[in-house]
Length: 440
Image 1 (cartoon, helix red, strand yellow):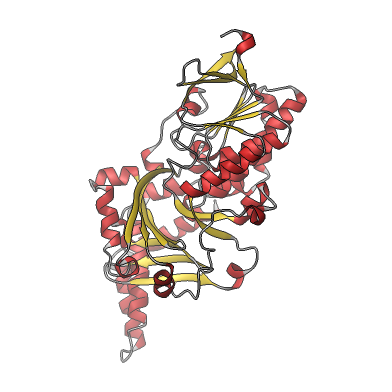
Image 2 (cartoon, one colour; image 1 turned 135 degrees about the vertical axis):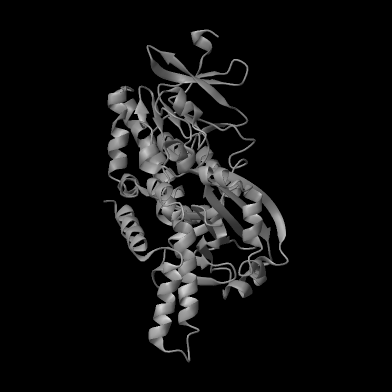
């Protein structure tokens, strides 16, 4: 292909997920010619996520969000933790109060549907989308990225800056030498889930909602993960419920447990099964989540390229938070691309302003604060087995201890803990966990 026939853009975005579409539309608004390359049949076609999207990040990209009629499910008006034992459950959730203030902070969304809409908004603002195309390598000149090589015939596409939003399988990021290792089993989780169809009226009745403008986002601890480092989740859509569990890859492998068996055990739990009884399975999916955060984060920029979203390990595992990080990082990447074109400088030094932008957001603050979480779970592998089930049992004993001297009741509760963990070790665990989550 001669220079005259080169397919060229100002910016190439690899991946049409939350980060990619956000980066693409911001760059396009800056007057740049943008190509967004997606390997799937369509944006969202390979995404099995059913969880929460956060209003603050969506509004950062589209202040007129509600006029655009996004395909969101229920607003999250109840959120919190469920603690499972083998046959019981304690709920610690927040309802009303700040959760009902406008604008609602979070909505349940089905990413297959939402990502298609998200990318469509970018296309409406001039982004050129290329689907069913895999980026396999980069075009380099003088060791600088100047485009990408795709799996199509004559598949070279040129641009002075490439924004990599490839997701968790960050092979392209590795090709650039920005990260020195593949996914780490101790800091990556495999999440398996089912999307179960139920009539909206049934969901409202079972979860105590008055209408479809109420929804739940629950993180589930304890028996759900069979004592392995991990969490379950449950989200209510308008006429579906997304139920799943995520466990670190190394723990899953060492335990010899099949992911589907773990999920099925959760679905059959006596506190969960009645909530989804009679539902129709719509889809089953699995997804790897990069939970290493700060410690697994690659270098975010090099000559001619930036990295954002899951590819950059931008996930806060404790809060199941990553969608908002992807969007805000995508925005920062798009702004950096515009600035680089204005300066006509695509060097690593110029693109380092991307990191400076991120440093001003909650992304880097939070990831740094939780930087020790993966190590904590690796060194305290039974933490998720001991304490969530203890909370369940302790509260069960407290609320059924009538007719018993309360001094004896408290001794029984303490014994319930020490039967699981010696007291001094329990105190050490709690102190270590506290230090981990406050980042010291």
